[in-house]
Length: 548
Image (cartoon, rainbow, N blue to C red):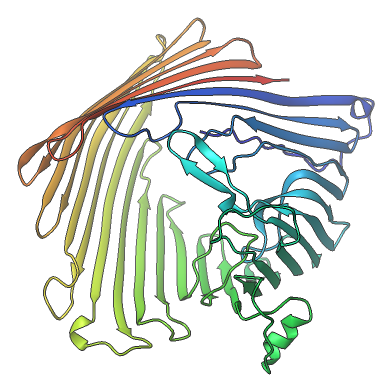
């Protein structure tokens, strides 16, 4: 649904000083896209029509570069994504970089990590100094309300101000950074809040991030972060004798809704030519929040070990991972869930055209008493096993190329609770086989496939069997690319027919010039069911791109 434009600027510090480097250069690209949607039999799952205009450009003169990007849209896209137009510019000269408009930065994975802000920032990396700072506004995810017909509708929320600083020393392999991030809703803004459930929030994150490389083989990495998060700024101030709250109160408006939590990890890795081994500890306490990241799973602690072994000149590759994981770190929940995880992966490549991959994973889940004692008969233990095998063969000849593959995957979930039917026993199988034949002189390829899947529960068995066919043809000296695919699957529930699913897709791509491409895609879905609703769905996309 979206067009993502990314400008990449390279380090020109070592560029030769010739006449060509002193010329003004301009490059970039432009993208135009429109989409049409129609459905009969069910409610619409997206807007009937939408469009996007996006692009990027780079101005360069010698060692001075100015990359910029922009994106405009009709604000009628449903289900996720920001519903605002974006533009940004990032001038760069040697070790200095300036960020203006809609840009993003990274402090650490627990603090600020790629979240887009609107404002200004700077990044300085002279030799061993690492300095980053920004000030601007973040988009509140609650500002967009999705509807099926009208698309994304903006609702009134508080303006969210943000600023942060990161200071460190070193390079990518050896460094130590300290970061400070503060994000706060502006309650003094003129915004009229029509949704009383939306409360003004504030967040402060202080953290460190480091990496040390020893003897070019051993790496020690880690991160430690403390977060103060207030769910409602309108509540009364909180006075406490706790030294931790008093420390944050000097930089932050602590009130009765403020929660202070910690998050971080430690990792030790040994990297040899054909052998790698690593240990990791990770802990994210309950209620840990950072408005500078999109999502984080809180209340979790894990210990893991992993290894990678290459044998017989990398023809045999072995991977293994073992670990323990649990929640309820502060004993505030009803249950403590513990998991024992171990997984293995074997990749065998006997020849250039042959590949065999086998994998196995075992996850054990069990519950124990937490804040409230529970009856022993309510204890739950589930074991999930996942195994798979993938075999493929490919051959490229002068006149003809062909290949084949077989994939099989089996997952078993067993309930080992003291009483019957407390959990669920599940058996899932997936099998597919297919191939490809390509006539090189004709620029034509054929890809048939057969697919089967089953899903067994204690009370119901559901299966799907079908086949697919894909055709690809290039004409007009490979300027026009035609691709058509069709899939048909028959559904069954408890050995009884339950309709079918038919999917057809057509893609047409025409290369107008070396720098201009136009694409058209159309997809048709027809579903027939005896237990559900029958519907037909049509989606089409027209896309034009131009590089200069």
